[in-house]
Image (tube, rainbow over all chains, first blue to last red; front, side):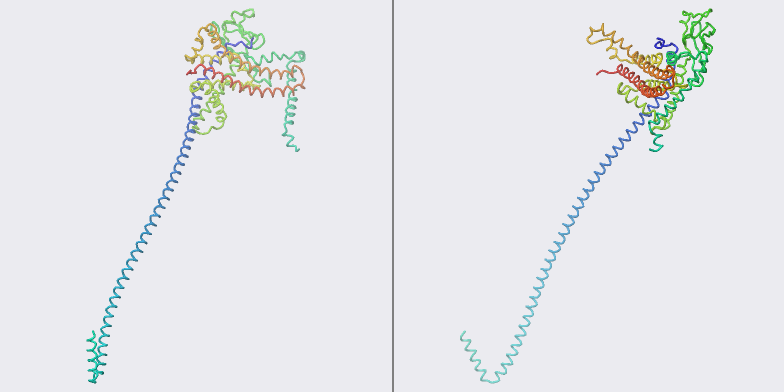
Length: 164
Length: 357
């Protein structure tokens, strides 16, 4: 019975001391300790969230970069393709115009040649005619030194004329 | 097997410990023999008296106990009588039958209680009832010591929290932080929900107060060697604190649950049952802590007493092995009871402040 009878003195001192302990620890220990623990937890959580956000941002940036790269590559391909087309066009055009020019030059040359030829021919003809006339004259002079022959010829010629 | 492995083997260590205590067991016998003197050497060892003396409170403290049994620390006796306050040293009444004449009455120590005696030396029970014994007893001193320890420890870690703001805990701080977090995350939050923060100081104080006193009680000599959390006055006071906190914070759902039973016509049974429930919860807390700690102390002391009851050192290995085993269990119980008391306190408070949806 002695053991389970609370003594008033100990109840009094326990109440007093526990009250003081509760007050002191509550004010000067638990409050700052719990506050700093929760603050630290918050900061750790914040840091983790930030890290997560940074990771996401990183992934987003990488994605964006890749997209940009892809776009740039596509654009480059496009430009190259266009350039090639332009180049082909230019070459084709050049070829065509060169061909046309060439044809024109050849044409002109041929006309010139034809002209020259005609002129030359005309000249040759004239000379041949002159030459033939001279030859004919000389031949005739030789032939017609004899009067008889001249008469015979005139007679022949006249005959021919009559036939026509 | 090399000699190193023999020294490290478990069996050797157990043997060594047993041998040590076998040798050490010789000494108490020597001192006992010296105390009792040649003519009283046949005095029987009274285990019950020894154990009760240890687990109950007393007005003196054998501070140098293992070395000098007679050296007692004189503790102040404070008596609140109907005529005024009376203060004197406990050494005045420590001797068997010594009577101290105070300002108002004469006092004598009888069965560890201070009694008023009249002129003839007989105990005056009627006058004794009017005297309130507020003495600084052994348990009060140990209460002061444990509170001093708690204040020093927690003020120091509080300052290290301030100094190392936002950094990882270090030293004592890192040893105690898991316990603080345990009280918060495993005791307070699951039982009290989002309103836990207001009760955290109370729960932490109760947890560490019970824990430190359980642990100090396990130390067999001076700084420890008391039985504070195994004293019903202390556990009752702690439970009374919980009783007040629970009922002062009880919301309307809590009171409605007590006074408006469902169905309402059961009120003549339910109201008394619920009112008994209010009282029985702290009473259960009181008795659980008191009984667990006291039982542990009694068991350990009984096992030690076995050596002196059987009056042979050959029992000591058995006693020592069992006491070491019991000490290990008591260490567990020290944590467990601090946990259970705090857990149930949190549960009761949580039930009183719970919001019904």
